[in-house]
Length: 99
Image (cartoon, rainbow, N blue to C red):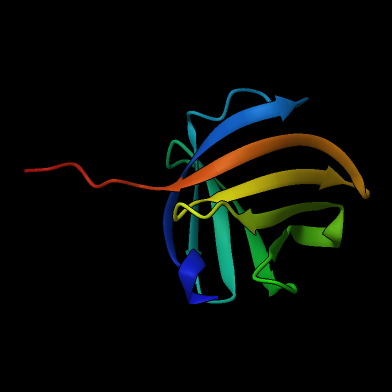
C-alpha cells in the first residue's frame, strides 16, 4: 500500500488512548514502526484489507491498528487490543519544516 508510505503525525480522537502528539508512524512498504520522540520504536507489519483499508499488526498480533482512508489524504484509525477497540486516532502526513 504505497499510499501509506511516509511519516505520519497522530492525533487521538477517542477511547482509552493517551494524547498522541509525541508519537509518529513511519511506514515503508509492508513494514513500519510507531516512534515516540525518536527514541522508542515499536515495529509493525502492514496488511492490505478490502475497500482500501489497511491493518498495522504489532508483534504477537495482540495489538492491531485498523485504518480507513478519510478522503482527505489521511487515515482514520482504531487501535484494537485482543480484538477489542481501545481507542481511535487520526493520521495526517507529516509536513516537513520549511527552511
